[in-house]
Amino acid sequence: MSGIITNKATKAQQYYFSILLICLVSAICFMCSAFVSYRVVALLLLLTVSFIAMTFNSYPVLIAALLSALIWDFFFVPPRFNFAIHDSVDLFMLLMYFIIVLVNTAMTRKIRKVERAAQQKEDREQTVELYNTILNSLSHELRTPISTIIGATDNLLTEFSKLSEQNRHELLTEISKASIRLDRQVENLLNMSRLESGFIKPKKDWCDINELAHDVVNRLKENLGNRTINVQITENLPLFKIDFGLIEQALSNLIYNAALYTQEHSIIKITAGVKDEKLLLTVEDNGKGFPEDEIDKVFEKFYRLKNTNAGGTGLGLSIVKGFVEAHNGTVQLVNIPEGGARFTIVIPAETTYINNLKHE
Image (tube, rainbow, N blue to C red; front, side, top):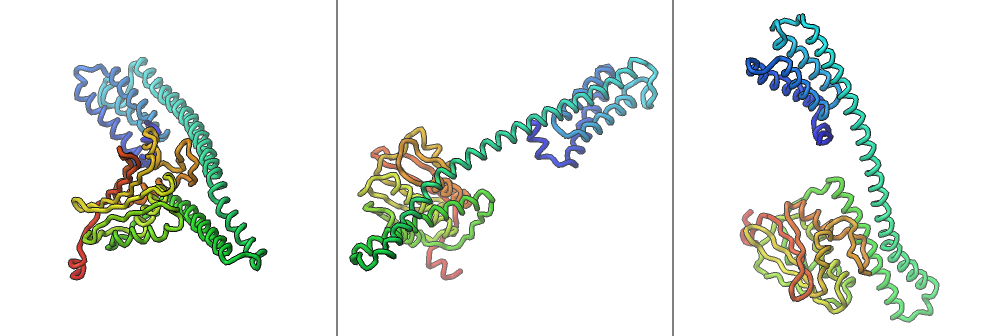
């Protein structure tokens, strides 16, 4: 906790709060001086300085120690309101006061140094683990489409005259699918980089969700196999003020994810609606659904379901979550009792109908 406070407070704030706390404790002790011995006050001030030493850096602690010693000497040690100390016990107590503060400060600095070293070691281990995860994911997900493209183009270049028109078309189709897959992986990496850097700023404009959904489906058609896509969005749905590109990518990732984890000939349904000036966008399928103990983890970076052969880098759903949250929205996943899974995006957004928009 002390580390968190130290990291959040600037140097000026540390000085300010240290002085303020000493003055506050001193004022309370002064008002109670008729009932509290001045030597008890010294212990209370020493306890306050010790707390400051555990919370802030060295120099604010030393300033607090000096200030509390002067206040104790001037306002509490008899005779009051001067800096003279006639009792050797009080003089010894004042000396010990500074020794305890210095020892406390030195020990706190050493503890923080050990904590920082442990934190750096943990950060390094997490970085290595993350690097290995990325490397393992990308080594397969990038190599596979690249190998497909290289193999197909090599056949076209060396065996072009021997290939039938159908063979050429099949090779070109393979190149197209692999290129789209490769583009998706690179796009996901770039989007995750943007999310991590905090550069995602939605550029909102009026969007037709019907048009957005059909654009995504048409673009993914080649990668969905024999799965059926049902877009069930009413024509009279209002326009929503959102970032078309971000929500298009989020929807694309959800549909692609549904295709990735369902069997051939599965049905993927896309619906949209409006409630309380919020866009409700759902993608559901009739597959096997998700393991209940993994539902809370699917939106984590690089997380891939256990005991599955489906590909992917584990970035798609975390990007969905990031893009939706950039709109101050939420995305939820639930299993459908009849079988399958349903993703629901809820985004607060301005709405308007086309007739109203003409007058803007």
